[in-house]
Length: 381
Image (tube, rainbow, N blue to C red; front, side):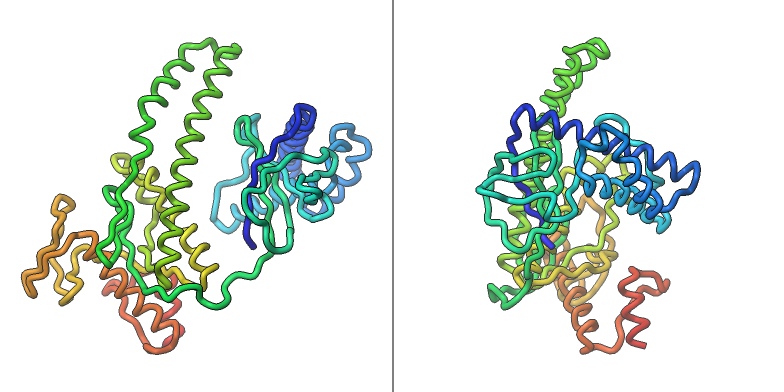
């Protein structure tokens, strides 16, 4: 499955219908959540009751039935994620926190004559800036402030014959250099937040001086939201270009298995880590590498900066020391590049273990490690 996002340009009348659809879905979501909390109604019972309510409710009748069914499916997925410990308990959606609706089947939407046809809304002008390949499955209409997007999920064939004869590479993620590769290449941090900080601060001060609930405050809020959107677009563009470079030139890309939510609890480094968009970079690289018959491997990052990539000797390395100097073999190398080479070595060893070429692997003395390492160790035994 791959998602293709296109900008759509609705007419004023269509934009009103789409906004009303989002508001109806938001209210329906809150009603279903309230019913689940008070009465414990199951997912299937909620779908059945929603179908019975629709003919009598004038607002529900204006929304496609499959769109309403997707609302109950969203709540069910959120509840399952909470029961599995993956997220917090589902929350009621206030105004502005529910900004999309989904057509789960092709019958509710279609591409006809270069336009996107949405049931109960009409034909929308769409900018198809890239080819949409595969069989269309679902379509999600998203509102981002004053812009509308159609996210179409298509079933395509990924993989196939390799498109390049790349080599494996280790990637060390950092703040000064977002990416340091084992072949001594580096990608400097763009620091988008620092560049936009003055503008955002001025817009925040301007909004805080406006009277709450006034039209001027709403205008200032929109300006601030658009500034944050521009910042997000710059980060996305950087992550896409960097991941494209990695997937196009290397066939096996080894990343550190970092716990980013835990790392951003350090308030001194949180903004720099989030500005470097490590998580999105790994996700996009994995998607692009898979489509080119490549592979992304995650390894345990502990000790990669203190270990010599040539002889394996370890030494203390404070963060202020940027050059790794080995007392045993005399290696002098950039700290991040040395860590990237250690990451690459661990990734290649893990790949051989998974391929069955090595019967066992080493873990830390404490017996701890990632779940993936422990599962490999148990299977090898």
